[in-house]
Image 1 (tube, one colour):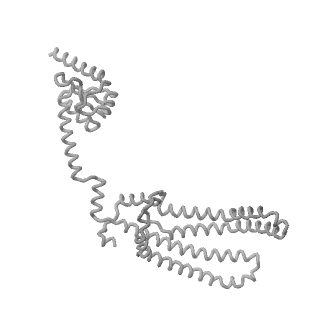
Image 2: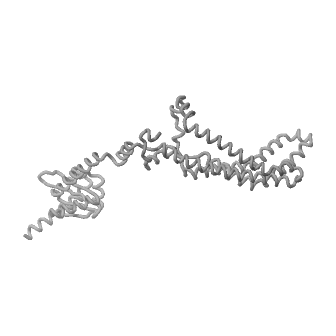
Image 3: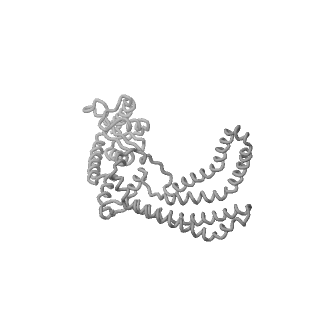
Length: 355
């Protein structure tokens, strides 16, 4: 079906990641059932003695009350509460084991995942046509055949186990009450082990198929891959225009450095070029600024044009954050910039006198 739709390409990591965010994952219910069953049976057999002991104590105490008719009438509430308590005591461990088994099985398959996407209401789910299509789809047919085969195999395994133990079951009355429990326990172990192996194999096969089917349904067309690349990396044409504009901007900015009066640095991380020309500027103006690589280029242009470079970390940081290129400096920086420009003028005057 994927090839007919033109979806011949494997899903990209982004497509898989987006599907996972939506809660769409490869998961086998057969594997969950098999793993939970194996855990349940392992602990159930281990806890069988505990269950038998508590059950025996409960039945013994309750039968004593039942035989006393007067006690039965007067203690119905107490008997009911005890029955509920003992049910929790006996069934509680098995319920916890089943819950933990199901949780571990899901984590093995999907890892830790929580998504609310599946809980959101969608009108498409109420569409009867879609519902009918799903009921008679290839996937539904596959699931039906799989379940029928599973029931046949389970029935066959149980039949083989009972056939092997048939002689002992028929003659169980001659074994004696004390050994009957162990006979039944051995029979349960034998059937459970065979079923566990069968269900585990079925679960693994189904899990592999679900993985294959999941990735196949996420297959993409070549156009979809191109569109995804454009979306994530950007349209090559737009990227080219951006690079071109950035180069033009950088060239213009570095050209403007030539008109700067002073370069204020961090000293290596930041560089801000400030111009103060009495003929054209009423107040000092930032003509260029940059960080890292751009800052290095500004310093190189300044050295090439003999523009003074002054280190002032607090002013450089504050101006880089608050003043854009082409803007006059704010009042907060007047004093600091005025001192720098005054110092430059003094140096210039002293150099002229020396000449």
